[in-house]
Image 1 (cartoon, helix red, strand yellow):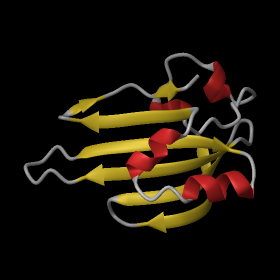
Image 2 (image 1 turned 90 degrees about the vertical axis):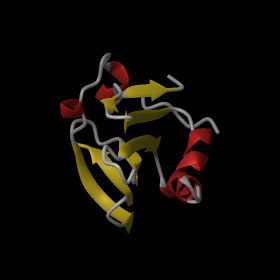
Image 3 (image 1 turned 45 degrees about the vertical axis):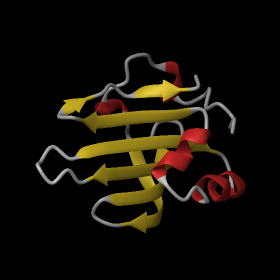
Length: 115
């Protein structure tokens, strides 16, 4: 599902994003557990809202896989639509989105999907 692009957000404008670029304030917690978090965040620089999901897959041998997804949202309707995704895999239908992962002991770069 194609969502509106956050063209005014500095995260959309910048190449080679780093964790320090992701400066958010918490707006609302949707769900929170030790390995699964969903919330609404606001970019401190421009005010753009993002639906955020953190998911950790426990690998009982260590080096747990971790995934972060940030999807730009604009209103309660967008938040409702994205929040209805039941699993992390369901979020893959939304574009554009920011994605970061730590898998197999390696950190992936933060990147836009659908830019």
